[in-house]
Image 1 (tube, rainbow, N blue to C red):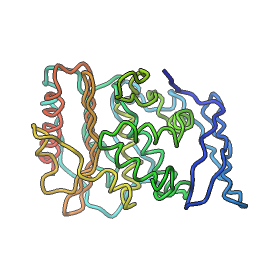
Image 2: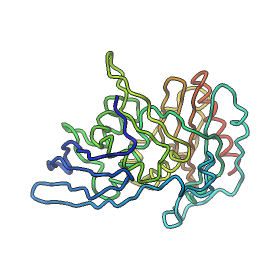
Image 3: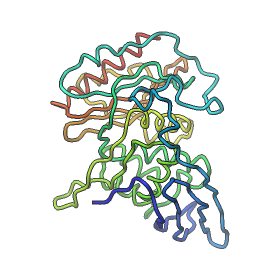
Image 4: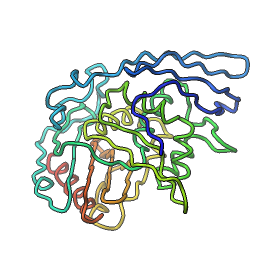
Length: 317
């Protein structure tokens, strides 16, 4: 079992960027989550990418977030999306509050303004494989040019390919994504973004005799912020491809996103089901939809919670 919440010195394995061999390079992070420069060698060139992101202390979070409620605005004014229509209506999540058969965390976010329209639930939830956190990390690497989507990480396999399969339930691909990015490096990045409730673990492989690992854990506020980061890269074609056509099943959640462009991630495990969605209307409204669960009696309850969240969001438009 391997787990990391605060990274120490870590070496990420050799990968290839733009078909050029890259050497092993160290990522240093102290106990406060401060990342020092990363050096990547491409043939005879050295490219230095400076990371100076100091992890936010828990005391720096709004009191509402510490109590399990999301602050009204979850992003800085300088990073707010602009130009798209916003939602002016009120979202009620009373139907989810009344839902029996498990503990539910849910949120609706207007991604064009950054406003959390409604949220419910508190505490820590299992997210099983950490694909969402890893994609948020990768989006920032893509945007900075450190790791383009076509970075080759295997024989004729790119990081986009591995994420695409991982988002469709392929555990081997998810493990290779973790192998490429590095558990300790991803954990240090998460801490630097203020994800103090997030604990990342290795991917649980599903072949007989595979080593057992604990599920990754996170909170509603951390996952909402990860969704905001991913939405910031939604105009990258590879990100839309990775998240496109999520498998909503044939139960209650199958109606979610009808008539909208839907991007997202769905994960089910023992006593939990997780949805993380970006829904884009023909008019340009971008909604973020998050459902986290624990202690579910049955998977269908997670589907029902997702359907109720979608209906509540539509009622506000």
